[in-house]
Structure formats: C-alpha cells, structure tokens
Image 1 (cartoon, one colour):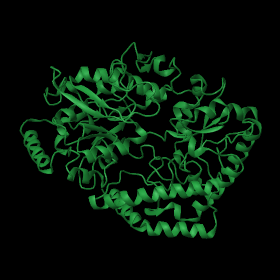
Image 2: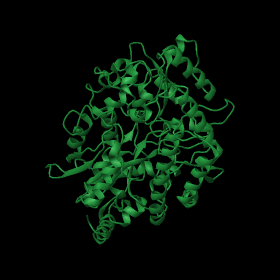
Image 3: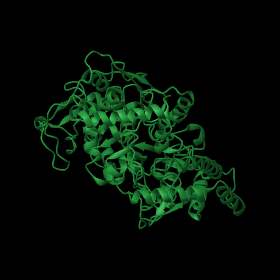
Image 4: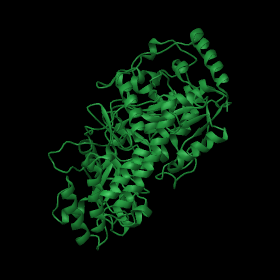
Length: 565
C-alpha cells in the first residue's frame, strides 16, 4: 500500500499538472434521457455545447488506443445476479464491453458477494493489497472517508476534478449536490452514483393482491389493519402457515412496522441506524417506550402465527425473498423492491400462476398520524452513497478518473442504462430509448432489475436514468412513485461525515449497539426474552454502558456541520 508521503507527492504533481495544461468544464449536467436526435430537457440542466469547446486530450476518448492499461475493479455482486454470471466483463454484459471499447481501457473484475462485501473490504485493508477501484465501499473504512484519505488508502480526488467534467457538472448543479459531494473538511473521497432526478424509496413490502381480492379486503395501512389481513391470510390462504416474511434482524426495509412507532431500525435502508432527529435534535429511537411497544406488537404477531416462525433461518431480503415459501403459497406479504411487483414472481416460477403482488404504504398506528420514518431514497441530492473509490494502489489515477467519468457523459449514460440499439433497446415513436423484451420482460423470467445487472449497469459509478427503471414496471410496480413517496419527518437526511477521530469512535460504538439491538429485538419477538420492566431496564443500562450518549453526540455534531456546510 502506498505511503502517505507518496500520496502527498502525487497530489502536488497533479496540482501543477492541472494548472499547466487542463481545462475545466463548469457547465450544466448532460441530458439524462437522450432522445434521437438529442434535445435539451426542460426539467434538468442543459447539456454542454461540445461544438463550443476546444478538444481537450485530458477528457477525450478513447483514453488509450493500444489496450495498454487494465484497471482492477472491486465490484460486489448481489444475490439477484450471482446465479447468472461470475464476471461482468466476460462478454454477456453489453455495457461493460462497450465501456472497454469506447475508453480503450481493459477491465479485470473482482466480484465478492454483496452480503459479505464489508468483511471482504476489511480483509483487503489488512492485506495491504488493493485493486485500483472500489465500487460501493466509500462507507466501509473505519473512521470515514477523511481518515481513509489521511491514512493513504483512498485517493483525494479534488485535484482530479478537471478530469471528470461530466460528474462535476452534476456536483455543481445544486447546493444539495455540492454539500453531498464533499466531506466537512472539503475532501472528495469518492465519485457518487448519480440519479437524473430524485428517487423515491425503492423497497418496502408487497402483498398478495389476488388474495386480497378473493377475500374482499383492502391493502392495509395501519398496524390493526395488518393484523386483520394477516389473520385472514393465515386462516384462509396459507393453510395455517404464518403469512408474513420478516427480516432476520427483527426489522424490515423502509422501516416497515417499526417506523409506525417512530423507531429507526439498524442498517442503512431507512436512514441512519437507530437514530432520528426531531427539530434538528438527534435522538436514539430505541431508548423510548415506542420501541418497547413495537416489540410487544411483533411478539404478539409471532405468537399468533402471523410472522414466519423460521424468519431467522430463512433470511429473506427485499432483493431475495424466500422462494420455497413463495412457491408453497405460505407467503402473503414479503419484503420487496418495486421491480418485483405485479406478476414477476409468477413469471419466474417461484409463485403460483396468477399470483400478483401489489405494493403497500408504510404502515401507521393511526391513519391520521404523520409518517415518522421511511427509507431515505436519495434524499435531497441527485448523488447517492456508494459510487467509486480510487485507491492509492492505483498506478494510473488520472486514467481511472477519466474512465469513471465516461459513465456520466451522454454516450456512457445511454450505454450504461440502455445498451445497444436493436439488442437491448429501441427508440419509440417519440425518439425515447425503450428496453427490448430482453430486459423489460425477460424470457428467462428475470426481474427487470436483475436483467439490468446482467446485461447493462444497475448501480455503482453511473448516471442512473430513472425512466429506464420505471418504463419496465407494470401498473403495480409504478405505484411505488406514489405509495412510497413520502419522507419520514424524523429521518436524518444528508451525507453526514465525521472527523477521523469521530469516525473511529462512531463506527465501533454504533456497530456494537446495532448488533446488540438486533439480538435483543429478535429474542423479544420470538418470546425467548420476556418484555418486562426488568429486562427493559437491563437493555437501557446496557445501551448506556455501550456509550450511546457519546455516539449520539458525535452524530449531532456531524448533523449540525452538514446543515451548515
């Protein structure tokens, strides 16, 4: 691993190189849903006028023409795509093949499983042997991005901004984007995934709409309505099996169920694990009676045979529901992404013919309640956590930056999202790109999100066009735009960053607390631990001993800095 001194020398050399010969492009983002011919959108910033720009060798493509440069890219594979490929550069993925052809840069992928990506990252850190680019690892370094830069692990990207005009046009397009792109210290440590417009939350719960119709029931919106529907499903549809699939942590995506009580569960899919804010004041949501009330209700559902009794072992997730339960008509409500709504499971052969899953609003205790907490989606910015980190083991950081920036330009964005005309997309009567059946209704029964990963690019360092997601959704999937649109009033929204010292303490304390909270929740839900005053006091005392107050103070400071950034 390169030393901090080498990193500093590299930055100095780059700064002089930029001053001497590189031009910048501070115009607006490129058009994100290209028509044919290209026209400027009305709702997004207009494209740079390339005819008015002098050719600049630092931002033109191909980067090299002799195939002399290969970039090693660490790129975790999700459960959705892992059964179909073990190498995205192997030829079947049109976008990555085109990226190599257009940039002249070869790619060698390293594909750990996304479920163990964090552990794999830590192993690489210990070994001191890092690939050139890390996809989606910006939040994995203990101590945060600033510490990773200080320790000589992540490359400081500020000096390379002139080499990524496409990405920087998005960074500079709104105040929220600019705040998101930099740490409190003003460092850019990674190149974020960008959405062409603000995305709604993408995961929550789906419910068997055909069963609701058969039983003359409406989609539930409150906890009491959920109790009624799940009871009807158990008694009349699942042959006595518990109809609710549940996360093994005791919490669920989009903070379903716990969010109704004002509780933020552990993990990233819902906000900042455990913590909420009320009028700018940070609180730990699991320390109040609302968390105890949530556990009491979930325990009641479990004891009444409404929650899958093997939910720990079954390990369902919104991208990988429990297929055996689905196929045996035991699942009436499952964690789900919007791309799996409708008849997708039936087409995949994992649910009976005619099975339809519709999406459900995040539940409340009373319909008049505000939505306390919900998945953040992208929040206020077009940028999203993840994206690409360039490591200090990269011998050609300028090439790596230029390679990544290609995906944010008009050509790269079109290919990443839509692929090859006549193969993965065609232009419709309005000259809009539209996916072919290979992606929109895959002959192998793959969900659109899985097909997007297999043949094109779904997430990562990319300008993601939401039209290509939503065009492939049926009437049930498109309901996510309205049903999951609201943000929780207690959500902590923003790209919080921490000083190196804060980051180290925060990472350790929060990780330990989240593990403890999950274990406590599961025991309470399953009835292993009685939810009484004695056990509750023990829980609160343990959280105090784990230094919850210190963690909360760190988050409060980071949140205050973000608001004033």
